[in-house]
Image 1 (cartoon, protein in one colour):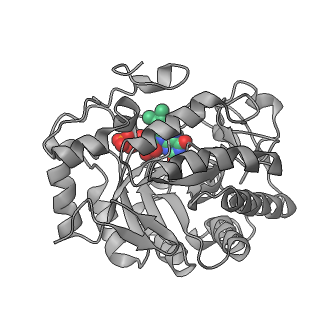
Image 2: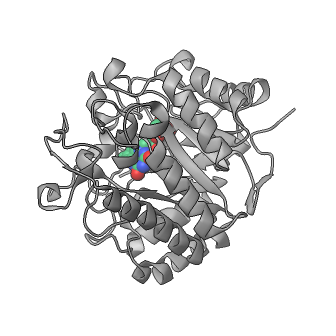
Length: 363
Ligand SMILES: Cc1cc2nc3c(=O)[nH]c(=O)nc-3n(C[C@H](O)[C@H](O)[C@H](O)COP(=O)(O)O)c2cc1C
């Protein structure tokens, strides 16, 4: 019988349990993406709280653009030494940390986005931000792939234990999968593998640069919930299979983007019953049974017995948790002591309304 507190190893990554802090943008970095004491303290506190692996908030990989304000940066080598301080604090407290790397595109919520160099698969106005990106040339696409790989190399040099490529939630890489935003007629548009080509190229380039033993993670949508305008479950399964073949080590399954509308979000509200928890479990279970990579179930994980049941009856092996750890960074330690402990988080999403992002029960 498997336990949520099993020790596991994925290539060079030794994990003390199966809990992962899902990436959470803290709105806490300096405006240029550099670190400060508050950030270091926040991650130190998370590490002390017992989580096996922390995914950082998304970090922008290009100085030209960024999907949000006060997010972490990793766009040049000046970040390496300060991230070393951060990773050391996490390691001193017996946890591991991966850097999530992202390119934003037209879903940028940064107040200065309209002044930035915003690229996209096609020059189509974003439904939510009203930004029309410039259609990326093939040379620009190669450049972005290189920026992902450069960012991954910097993360490795700064002693992050892994990197996660953010290919979900309607940001640049994810937009290529979304027919509404990708009308390209070249090899980056059309059928699903063409639309996913930029993601495949990113994985290949990152792998080439970080070596075979460094864990590569990816966060990928299984559905945009936009009908035919979006990525569908059937198509995404092909992408999950292919990224697996390309040697991604850990896959975090997500869904939805800001253009999905209807109040849909990867961070769902109104999780009031056990049935509403772990809300992507059916599709994630199917993906986990199809790929060789380790699979993380994300979204609404709130109950130890339920996660334990999923762990022992499916191929899902890891559970990521976002909002509850903003509320209680020591939730995993509390669960270790008492598996019946109910998290305080009520999934209200008011954590997005403050600066830094914080929980109404922990400000
Ligand atoms: C304040 C906040 C910031 C977030 N920032 C990121 C991010 O930087 N990258 C990302 O992939 N997801 C981000 N997410 C989504 C979470 O990683 C997670 O997928 C989502 O909250 C659902 O998990 P939960 O129910 O455990 O909170 C964010 C969510 C919140 C609430």
